[in-house]
Length: 94
Image 1 (tube, rainbow, N blue to C red):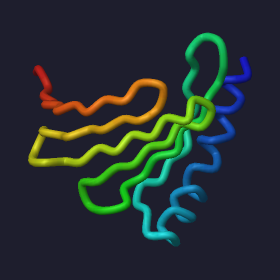
Image 2 (cartoon, one colour; image 1 turned 135 degrees about the vertical axis):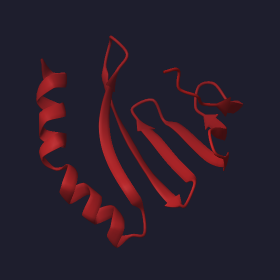
Image 3 (cartoon, rainbow, N blue to C red; image 1 turned 45 degrees about the horizontal axis):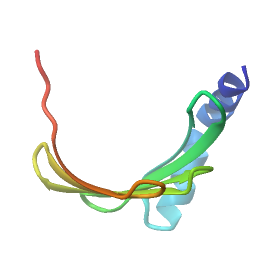
Image 4 (cartoon, rainbow, N blue to C red; image 1 turned 90 degrees about the vertical axis):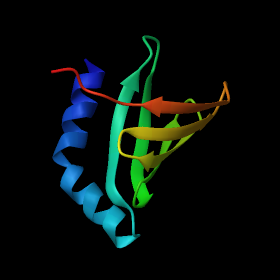
């Protein structure tokens, strides 16, 4: 239930959060919640440069940096409990 209430509050403030991010040069700044079944964590993400997204998970102290190499191809590095570097190809099946 708390997840729903937090989600609604964040949705209402989404436009204001985006405007704050733009003031600092961060595009598409978002604050979201994620649940791992035991606790609610917050995630802040935004684009600091075109094609470079930074995410930080509050609660699990997880930093993710995703760089768009080319259309549908990303290089992603994650630091937290587990440290990973991934090459991701994204595609849609119609």
